[in-house]
Image 1 (tube, rainbow over the protein chains, first blue to last red):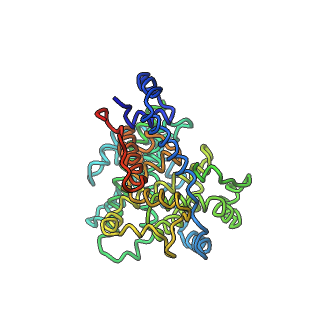
Image 2 (cartoon, chains in turn cyan, yellow; image 1 turned 90 degrees about the vertical axis):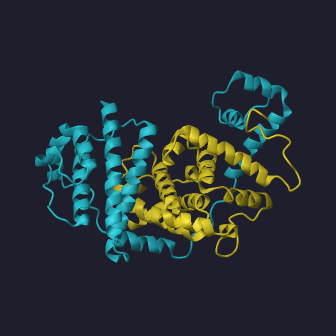
Length: 206
Length: 194
């Protein structure tokens, strides 16, 4: 019986494998060939050429877009609000979970920015998003030493929030009605996930 | 090896860029441009989309510089933004619709050339582009960029074992695609029943 390809790739990557696989490999030229081919393939992938020169004017376009982007003030709360929000840290996961359930106000709403009563779904989503920002800001700073399994999804979610913020910053130009609502809904969902992960990360850091 | 590991910046460049110095921002673009564009083009097999994504990456880098706290390498931060952007693009409904209808030759860039002109590299590039988006991402992120299976699993919304099984299947597929026609593998040890 030959070694499986996943075992050969583990060997290639220096991961632990069953000793029997190593023993088998010493005598099986076919599996040796597969292992060598996997190593060669990785070398060939790494040796593929880099992208050619960027299109003319690429840097100029980036500069224009950076200059045109609004100053980022939407995501983070002002210092005064941050300080007030810090007092809410004790609400912890309870508030988080309540906020993720729907537009109804959380029990701790007294300590949060009072949501504006409106039937406009975009305004409701924006208010929920702002409330989630407030709770997020109240969490402790991220730990200096982070676990990859937790840090990577958090980084991914933060990048998604940034991307949604960028999309929302151009929302005025959105052609299809409902785009703004879709984006704000997406932002609330991503913020919910981000908040829950950040909370778990903060708990583990204690 | 990841092109990001070859990207170097003079000391203080990030701080100067954060302070709004245009020259520092351009230095970052020049230093990381090839790595960002290469990664985008390897993950997103459509030249125009990959170039747009590379621009998006730099806009995000420059508008989010305040969020870079210097805990990890700057190259790693730029790379994570690039990977996230590309994976988000590949997950977007628009891309999924397009990828169902796009022809394989869209791998080629606007001038009708691939990034490789050497025979072996060209074959490999074409084989790579014939993988599914997810399989290609796993192969590139693991074998070239050095991501762990746990990291890739998290990025793809799955587990480390999902990433690993994708890598195994992708390697088997690549090997098949790269075999000269008429030559069959005597045995593909993907399973124990070989």
